[in-house]
Amino acid sequence: MPILIIEDEPKTGDYLLRGLSESGFAVRLARTGRDGLALAREGETELIVLDIMLPGMDGWQVLEALRADPATEQIPVLFLTARDEVQDRVRGLELGADDYLVKPFAFVELVARIRTLLRRGPVREEEVLRIGDMEIDVLRRRVRRSGAAVTLTSQEFALLHLLARRQGQVLSRSLIASQVWDMNFDSDTNVIDAAVRRLRRKIDDPFQQKLIHTRRGMGYVCEVEASAP
Image 1 (cartoon, rainbow, N blue to C red):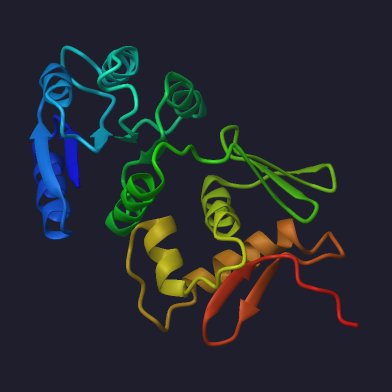
Image 2 (cartoon, rainbow, N blue to C red):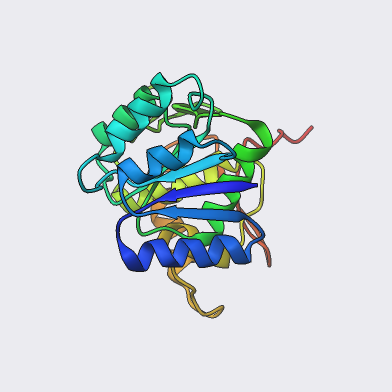
């Protein structure tokens, strides 16, 4: 599938070009917003990976131009940017972006998101996730259980968000490490276990219904378990 990368930072652009090519994609790279927009309008682009902070014409302007042109309005756009403020995420989604991934990022997650967009067409990340009596406002980064606000650190929210959006899936410690910390941890480390314990103190301990569960020898899962008969 032809992918267009619009990224002005040389190392990042080259890394994405090489990595996505090695993952089996046909890839083109533009170093400026204007060049990227011109390539998109040439046709044969199935998906665009777009930075925001570009010289001359920034990512916001590129996206607006794409969505205003019938020839490009349906191309899925994934923002890949260092801008991680809530208002930036909201603005990107409101302008018509199909996904939003913050740098630094795990390459495996980027590839997974790209494959999802290519497989399903334009899809947007759910703004609110609900599991049992827990509600996660993804854009505003707010969490409530049984209507009560739960205050989390940025890292705790990232961990909960990962578990919640993979509801019902058992996630290994190594996968959690790569997705939340963008690092590989040794198998004998207790960093992940300690982080999950801290999250449980806030999410589960004050409530009767537990949502984060350990699967011995496998990892962790977030789900509502069926009551025993």
